[in-house]
Amino acid sequence: MKYAYYPGCSLHSTAKEYDLSTREVAKALGIELIEIPDWICCGATPAHITMHLLSLALPVKNIIKARAMGSYEIVTCCAACFSRLKTANYFMRTDDEHRQKVEQIVGEPYKGEVKVRHFLDVLVNDFGLKNLKGNLVKELKGLKVACYYGCLLTRPPEITELDDLEDPHLIDDLMRTIGVEPVQWPYKTECCGASFSLTKTDIVLKLSCDILQMAYDEGAQAIVVACPLCQSNLDLRQSTINKKYKKDFNLPIFYFTQLIGLALGIDGKKLGLDKHIVPPAALLGEKDKLAKI
Amino acid sequence: MKWFISHETIRSPFLKTLEKDCGEKISHCYQCGKCSAGCPISYQMDYLPNQIIRMVQLGMEEQVLSSKTIWLCASCLTCTSRCPRQINVAEIMDYLRRRAYTKHMTPPGEIEVPLFNKIFLRNIELHGRLFELGLIGMFNLLSGKFFKDVALAPRMFLKRKIGLFPHKINNSKEVKEIFKKSGKLGRARRDKLWQPKLLFLNLSRKLIERIERLK
Image (cartoon, rainbow over all chains, first blue to last red; front, side, top):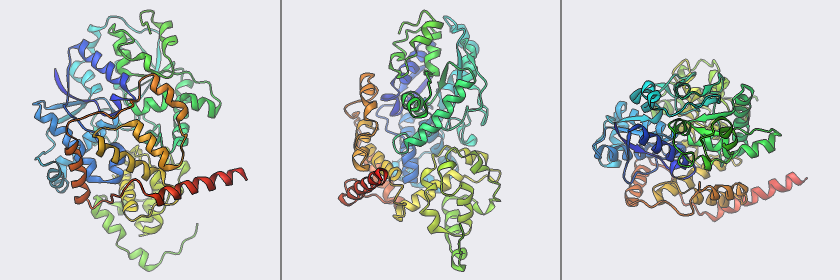
């Protein structure tokens, strides 16, 4: 299995551990991820708020780069990049007026034929849960997690085409496969405030606090995410939330790839488990003696 | 709040231009309020999302474009995916923000989001990929909150989660070209980052806020 890999800006800085663990898991499972050479930012939220055409042209430029590699499927891990690439593809397929303008900007014809996939989708639907189970070195028994999907993985459904809109289950399925028990909780697709992390921090603190509280109340020992912005809001701002709302949360926030990596017997350091702000060592050390962090 | 809606307002072309520009049938909205019920940030808004839609239907362009609501939308798309009339509410919020920005109608209390967007995009235009430290530094400097999140910085550096230098790519010219062309084609407003007037306004606003808090 060969894919063009679009990491996105976050995975090269604040979410380095997501990049590290994705590459490790892919290597261990024999999935080949080739990074798109000279990829550029997808524009994220600021682009579609400020200039509509730019928010389509930037992702299309990246997709064209991937097409030039001879690969017809792009894999990305960041939920925001995934959403932007998918949205651009949707516009290029369905809206002639926008397509002509974007083609003029990027200087190449493109009709939205390159497929954009999320790594979750690749693991569950291409590689398969049965196959994954066969590759496991050990099961992470006794760990209870809340799987948190956030906004952009499933919304809007006609564009992302990934999972159930209100009750997604891809991360839950993966977690069950590696022996982790996902809790049932209602905040799977709530918003953490994402792009307001810098501008409207108060909103982010409140929304993230609600999410942490719900996960804690349902008995989760950690939260598993698939989006770098969710992770940084819940992990990096957890101490501020504790201070502001007088809470005592100590919930490590994992990327799904990190836990899969552990189950595949990959060393914790290689998966970037030392990069978390809320240290996961105590939780994993209790459950799993092999994870030396 | 009571409003007098004049004949001209109701007959204004606002609704029609909006429907044409973003291809959404806003006149289909029957005010069920599902968008506002699901909105995670409605508790901070001055008008609820369904009220904004109603105001658009009534042609109240000025009130809509100078509302706080449009700048508080987090683009989480909950409203879009739940609308029973298939109206892309989040896209309408995007459209309204773009329109308010080009028309210089941002409310004075909501400068952070447009400023952040501007800095973010200039950052990408310059480096091709996001340079976080530059973004945060520039935002703190221009918004007048110099020491925001400084306490988090040491941990970020120690964990090597934030780089001191921008990423280098070989095609920065290509990126600049995309920005230039899309700005021209979309007739977008693209002004300079360093505006002494704006900087002064932000700083004095922060000062007044602080004085008021002391009282």
